[in-house]
Length: 99
Image 1: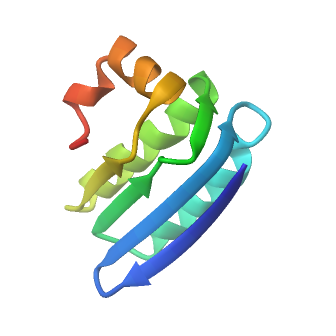
Image 2: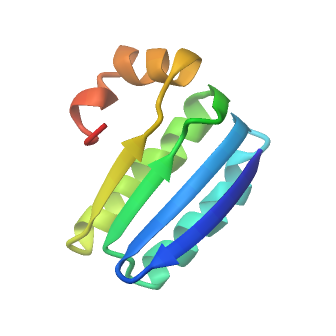
Image 3: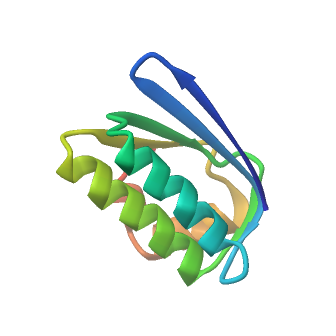
């Protein structure tokens, strides 16, 4: 997994590429902790280059969503496709996140 972060005023765009699974999720969890600790209010996850996600990866994204929302912010998801899109639909997360 590769990720990049771009801050633009109040908005943060976090781009995730490759595979988000039990091996790579801890790395992303530290990024989520940073975003929450900095009180980022508008977070957009760009998942256009994400090829595969498992339950660990979903857990990190749900954690980000809950923690940012608890601080009065919002998480959006863009570029969801292929296997990650199927997982989000299966778990009905496409109804929770603005996609």
